[in-house]
Length: 132
Image (cartoon, rainbow, N blue to C red; front, side, top):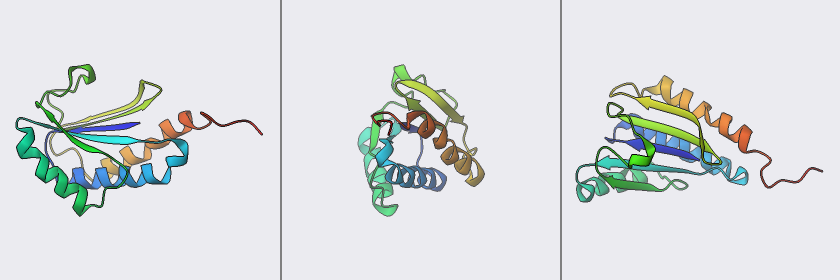
């Protein structure tokens, strides 16, 4: 499971979401999933730009939602100074955590984050599969 929490929609965020969405689509057989949460002061105002991102980038495998409050859900402990937080989970345990300040999410970092999905796919592979 990949969870992306963001406080602002940017072109770099849209690129990350699209690449994660594509990775999820390619790994459905491994039960890979993802979701995106936009942390906003005004959920009603934040929803239309999020819908536009989904439409413009053809996001097909990843739910995009809005959370009312920039601090985010308390149980996720989102860093106050993180513009984007990406967590990757296997069986309820965080295996990868990227907390990025404003302007740290760039092409090279996006590539690194997408590549780190292999860590959760390797651990998740074999769940529900039988040995030959």
